Image (cartoon, rainbow, N blue to C red):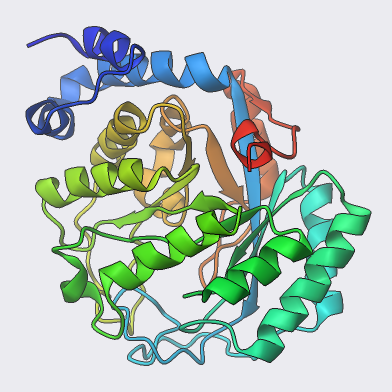
Length: 334
């Protein structure tokens, strides 16, 4: 077998990993982890240098969701004691963008729970985005509002939304084990509608929901086929009161191997270490940035994140710098 460095060199020439090679990354010996990270960094450095993109989420609508996603504290089947509220006012969403700017976040993510946006909710987001773009012209605005119709996607594009997030979450075969209130194809179609409207597609996964290694490889291939510009890699933060509460299948070293695999399989794309970063990578968080080039700062949807000062100190200690270019090449290409 080629070394990880040899594999990285081949990837940089356009080579696509075989299933056997992808599996060898996930099953690599722990003592080879630094060699694997070094190889992944060769690819990351080629496309992103030592820059790290910062993203901030605002949960504009919490809970009140009729979907039955087993990982989510906001779903109808969840008994988790979370705060629940309807769609925020436009002014609150605009204020969130100002906070994101102060934290040096180049991307501001407007997220709302639910199967998809009602007309009133979509109109609030549209009006907010127009105002945000007028004030923060270079800020990348990402929306994550659930399943979209073609007309809704066009409305978001016209308002100034740069990116739309809708995660595939898991593989097509494992999807029915996680939720039955919508299909895997529903998710893929929404990513396609956003892309057709001229919005940069963002789609990622949640690792640690009982999937097999073959499922993880299938996720990487699906995202490559979708040509997602931004790929959030979440690691399950199991919340008590959800169907997946108590699940604890991940180790920091395995999480790093997953990040390396996604860099090998999607070499040119923004790989973002997302939800569950703090509780699953733990003290190995800094090593993740040798494969990934993006993180969320602040809190997530219903779970707390790391203090932004700690994240900035981590980047400084690594010798990485905040990417202050608000819109990356993938966004400006649309």
